[in-house]
Amino acid sequence: MVSGIMPSAALVTILGPNINFPQDFNTNFLMALRWIHFLAGITWIGLLYFFNLVNVPFMKGLDAATKGKVLPDLMTRALWWFRMSAALTVLAGLAYWGNIVGADAHNAVILGLSASPGAVMGSFFLIWTIVWGLLYACLIPGKGIFDKGAFIGVVYAVVVAVAAWLFLSWNNHGWESNRLLAIGIGGGIGWVMLLNVWGVIWRIQKKIIRWTRDNAANGTPIPEQAKAMARQAFLASRAKCSSSWAPPATTPCSGSDEG
Image (cartoon, rainbow, N blue to C red; front, top):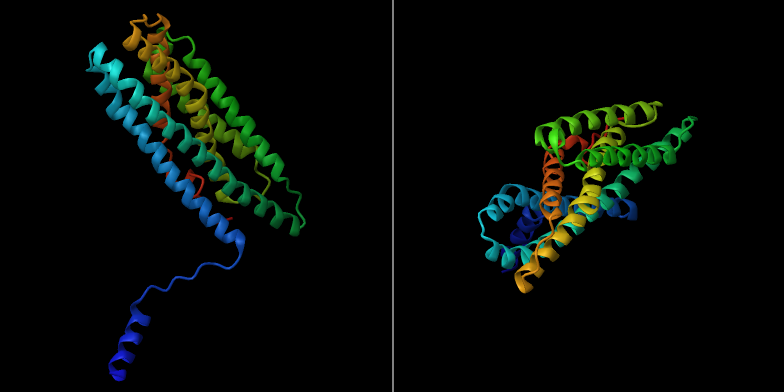
C-alpha cells in the first residue's frame, strides 16, 4: 500500500502545477493592474464593437414604438458597463504606466542624468487632451464636410500622428524606455477615447434615452436636435472604433521592455 502511494505522490509533484507568486508587494500590484486593465479593456472594446457592428444597424430596423421600449433599458445598462469599463481600463493603465515612468526616471537619476517623471506625465495629459479638444471641435458643426465619416477619419489620423510625433519629440532625453514612449502614445489614444465616452457619447446618449422614454410613456415629442446629436455620437463612436485598432505594442500593458 505504501509503495503504491509513494510513486503516485511523486507523479503528482512532477506533473502538478508549480505556481509561486512573487513575494514583494509592487510586483503583485503590477500583476493585478495588468489583469484589471486587460479584463476591463476587453469589456470596453467588446461593447464598442457591439454598438457599432450590431446595435446601430439593429436600431435602424425598429419602428418608433418598439424602439421606445427597447432603447432605454438596453442602452442604459450597456452604457453603464461601457463607461465604467472605459474608466477602469484607463485608470489601471495609467497607474501601470506611471510606475514605468517613475522607474525609468529613478534609474536615470542613479546614472547621473536629469529626469522628471512629472514632465512626462504632464506632456501626456496636455498633448492628448488638446487632441481630444481638436477632434471634438470637428464634430460640432455636424454639416457639410464635417458630417462625412471619411473626412473625420482622415482628420483623426493626421491629428493623432502629429500628437504622437510631438510626444516623442518632447520626451527624447535618452532615459525614456521604449515601453514608456510606446505606452505614452497608445495610452494617449485611450485617454482620447475615454474623454469621448464621457464627454461626448454619454452626454448625448443620456438625453436621447430620456427623450425616447418620455416619448414612449407620455407621447412627448422628441426634440429637433436629437437627430443631429445622435449623428454626433455616432461619428464619435466610429472614431473610437477606429482608434481601437492601434497596434498591441502601444497599449498600456503591452509595451516593449527594451530600453
